[in-house]
Length: 409
Image (cartoon, rainbow, N blue to C red; front, side):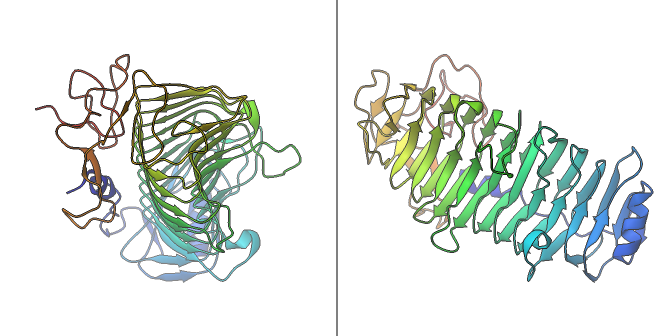
């Protein structure tokens, strides 16, 4: 079984269970119990309509469901101290703000959790937070969910210190994440099949921007950790993995131990962002134009990455304009644009275990390293600890290049 498939297994929904808290049979009763600060369970059944949830207490109110309960409508969170756990909901045939599946409408809220839920189809976003520049939500956890079939984005997220983890983001027509704020962690998710609809759409896995007169602009993206994610197929003529716009306000972005595969236009674009660290990632056909594009004075490092079938308008497997000077070391390139002047790098076949899926017919295939790969034990020697995309620590005497550590022996 491929390493990428192992990632997917963590996203299986929990088994149906009977209610262990107050059982309700209407959305009105659900809202009433939550308003009193009670945890509540939605009984098995089909519920059509919207529901507003506002917890007036300081204790967390948890909303669960039993059996095959499903909500056909919009769930709106109008306060903090709320948790949605294991819900199934969709919201189709609507327009505007009524078209999102989950709307987090509180401004500057805290203690908000959405876990193990199946959210989609959605006419607009699967999850959308209210615009709240300067008062981003804190204590937000979005984990273990299946976010799918969204007309716009999987999540428009304005949060500080938030966690987006173990989610399967699939069949999204625009962006996986539109993200703003400081100290957010995006970890161990699978972003699959983000296909522009219409075909001219500008679709990205993660996008942020700083435009003063744009009312959607949130706080700058700073101290981001994006690690151990699988990005598989972002299709369209203007599609990207990362689209970081807004100049030097965005900074300290760590992108570590991810697999980026099959991205239509640009794998990553950093426009003026400072202190971007690209470390130990595996890029496979990740950008038909440029695998990574540095412009507008962007700074950072390109360290210990596999760049396979990389495209670039520059002399390296990435492009940098005259104002941008990222450092680079310990990378491996093959099958596309090769490294031209990296003393510690290598141009060699990474010898992936099963890059075309021939061994197990798995769509995600297997980009772990075979014995004899020149990526093994050739990464940055100053890196003494890391957890790779499968959860494995450094297993040899030195970091392996790319997202996958090969087991010792």
